[in-house]
Length: 377
Image (cartoon, rainbow, N blue to C red; front, side):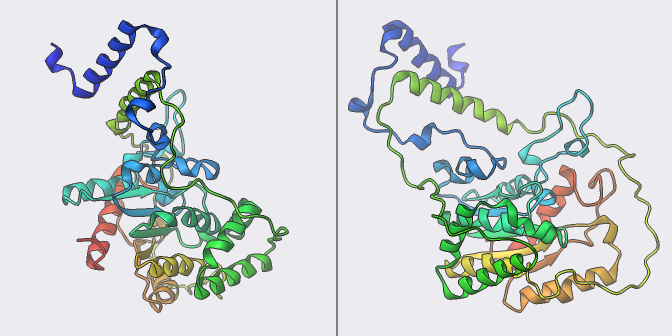
């Protein structure tokens, strides 16, 4: 029977047995004089879910286990985050845990495609945030910039990026100072950043007096002062528990036909209205593109699938001819997945948020475009 125990669990069992044999009193003996110093990051718990601004360094993209991975970062709001495997993410059933799992997200499905393509040195990371606007996204980007992500892909459901003055008041003064520092490194990004902030001010944001910039956790090794047998046992047990995150969705996908009415009026011609006519907000995407370009890496932008507009040619042409042209003029790859056909209920439960099946279709479109643009092997 012992031969059938998985190696990791066998090792844990042996460590625990040795600890018991030699007595509990030795659990806290410092092993570092014998084994050398340990990196504290190896004892941290990292998450594939957005951990909040204050705990951003606990996202899995910062884990030393992903240090050598070529990184594709997905950014945006809930339509990109989309960790709900079905409608229960937005409308939970009574007394039932929402069917949520990171593998159901667009990034999770993109990882599936990378694995199928044998691109094992690549990984996709979900840095989208439910409710995020562009100012939030710019801050998140500055935090992951030291990791030098090879590709950043930002998606939006048209003008959600500029709602509530692009969430200008959601960022603390210290974080604005940090963004001042990061975007001020190059003349072009410094100019764009000042223009972006001026636009926020014109729409009601009041900058605070200058404060010291936020000091994120350093990326290098963090040496522990002491490490005991007990620390090692707990660390291995936590590592084993973290493997359960790979089990997939907690419940089978559930479809609810009454979530919304999916009847649609016949298409009729209409003018396209640009809610951001001077691109005062939209210019923020150029900030990410310029920073990526300066480090010889890549940025691309897409509009998310929108069932209510998937046959609206005036709307689609407006997005492409106005916003797409604005980006492509600067050589920034642009895609509109608005016309992507999503089957109601099964692939999209409300028209703009998708089940795992819809997210798989979006991931396939992103994967195809990254390859077409020469950004993936």
